[in-house]
Length: 118
Image 1 (cartoon, rainbow, N blue to C red):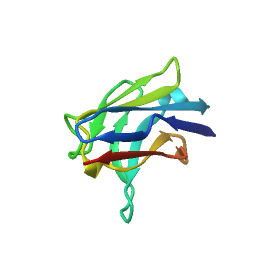
Image 2 (image 1 turned 120 degrees about the vertical axis):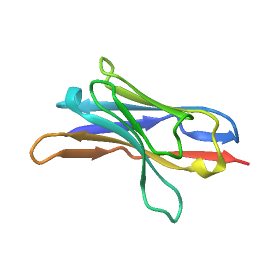
Image 3 (image 1 turned 60 degrees about the vertical axis):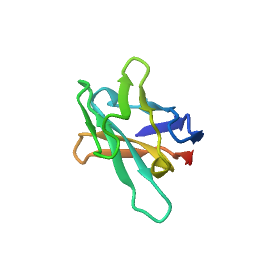
Image 4 (image 1 turned 30 degrees about the vertical axis):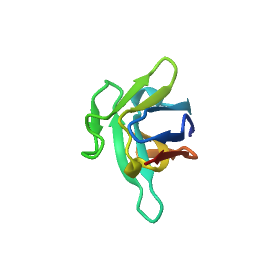
């Protein structure tokens, strides 16, 4: 079982920056695919970015060039650096871990609110 704790959300003006952190604890973290998802009011949860243990990344088109996901395996921490924030980035951001066991072990954090004012 994996526990995920996010931090770093807040209120920022358009064009500003925030860095989210997610500290993970549990087993098999070294092989976990880590990711950030977000859910805006009235919308479905959507993928923001993922990173595998080797460091390869994947981003939603809406955040490419503005957001950067990274991980520090020694600290069991994944980060999301968000630059050039827009009001449409406003959402609750969730940390996710997906461990490729059989069956896959998927865990979610409690979420952190990001609000971008216009």
